[in-house]
Length: 148
Image (cartoon, rainbow, N blue to C red; front, side, top):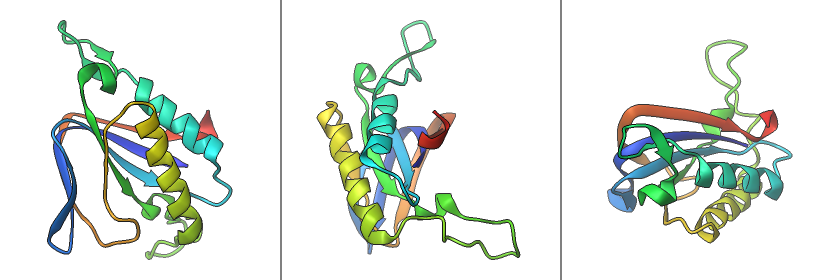
């Protein structure tokens, strides 16, 4: 499981002209799921995200977690994180988990974040989404459950 974490000042996701999720400040998560990912992978990443200290404290030092900062989460499913670009010019997405498996694990991941006390907004799994965000910093971090 791979998650791109983008610290943002504001963000939203729109599907068919309708906003399905929006946050004021916090993290935009682009969530990729591959074959063999498990609830343990989702738990590991959710806990890492909840505890990651990348918000600035009163001294300007990255020392606050999202919860301490009062941030929210916008979680977007993103199968293209598992693109294979080794051959040719058109990426292959065979490393991405099948949609029915990925959807269940993405929902579990989001519910785990919620259970950790975080406000979670989402896009719509499998939909064509327009994501708007103002990246703060910019601060972007990639977490991969296979490289613990």
